[in-house]
Image (cartoon, rainbow, N blue to C red; front, side, top):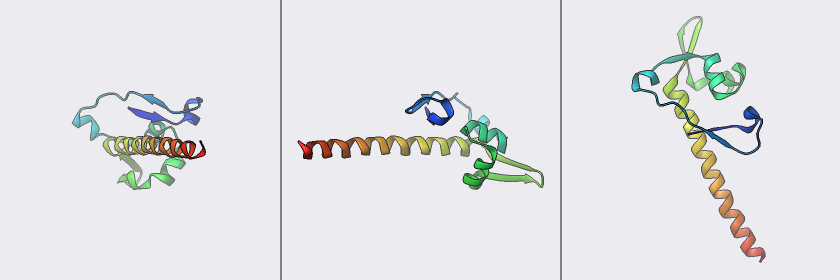
Length: 100
């Protein structure tokens, strides 16, 4: 499952989408930077600025991103968001119990 940012979907709150199951061979595929940016739901320039560590130079004119790296970055983001949500709920519960 991946979390889609609300500004991409136009909905408030976090949504989950089911990513297709990919074989090990499909995960080794290299996609272009614009395709990777479209998967992340951001612009090409923003992807280059924030995810330059994922970009590989295949030739002087071709930059690619390995699909496995891109999807693991998305999963890491999802886990961090879920951890933040759980932590915020605990803090809120403690604050409410102190106020009572």
